[in-house]
Image (cartoon, rainbow, N blue to C red):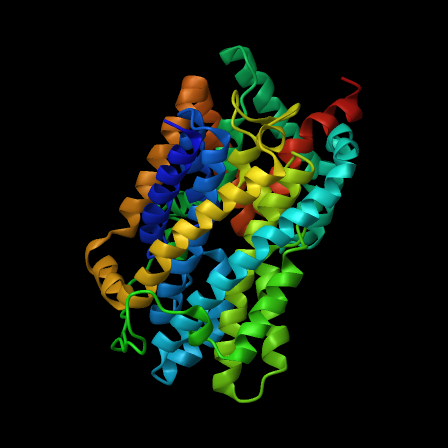
Length: 451
């Protein structure tokens, strides 16, 4: 079977799977994308097919995450959180379906703008790739300090860099002694599921349970659907006004050149920038929502492609989180030394297979979201148990960590997840900070102690 056919099949699977996952409110991108992408890599899929799968997954997830955000007032995932204020206004005036259509249409436009632009910028930056690869340790350390400074836990994040690095290296020494080789998958799976596991641990603790306990069931009121277009596939440029399309295109253009900034921060910044220049609360809300969802797509695509094509090492919040398996999936992909999609694919292949991924996702997730959002939301809320979904992903993580390192790998994963999750929840130490510390920990400890 040719690589092209495999890529199309995997992109179709990703589009269907992540279209459905996006309907589940509160699903974390990192905890979901990392283990499933790892499975695809470890099953031996060609690099180009892995990339097409990931592009389809990202676009599908970020289109359907708009459904719970707009219709029910709960964030579909972390990048949807900045959209809640405007989405709730649209719900209060009885127009959540309008908000949803604006968001999804903005997302489609943002994705198609980001792919070629970020690839061009990555090719330009690739002339500095050797410098970044040779100085990866110190770059990761500096990035950990920088990201920590701008995280919620600012000084706690910075003060804990060396202790956390020591913990990572200590666990690495013990696990490598037991297993006979260094573990990588187990470590970043632990970082990825930390926030999810922290909630489960708190629910199992008598003293911490009140923090996560809910005494009443959530009640959602969904407005009726009203179709305002003919056919199955609406034109996003007709859903948005000309001014809104221009705003989405402009902000997506800008965010396509960023790769070191938080996607949530960029989403909020660009949305508020457009909103501040728009008069009237209705126009402000719809324009901001379209822009924000466009920026979620453009930042995720840019922050995956730029470090992947230019450097081969994960130097962005997305590369350190949801896209981590594209950089590190030992023994198939590694970033030290660089042996991943960076040197296994050409820029033309990134463009071609990236387009395959987002085109397939567009033809599945976009019309589905526009035509069946309300019915799908009702089905999910009535019949899908969120705790079961969380348990499924925990199970996938156990499978992958045991595959890499047996019992030692699983224990490493849950040790990192427990500690990292609590640091994230109570001290505001960001997941990106933990990933940066992990990648720079070897350099830090060897430099500090002369090992």
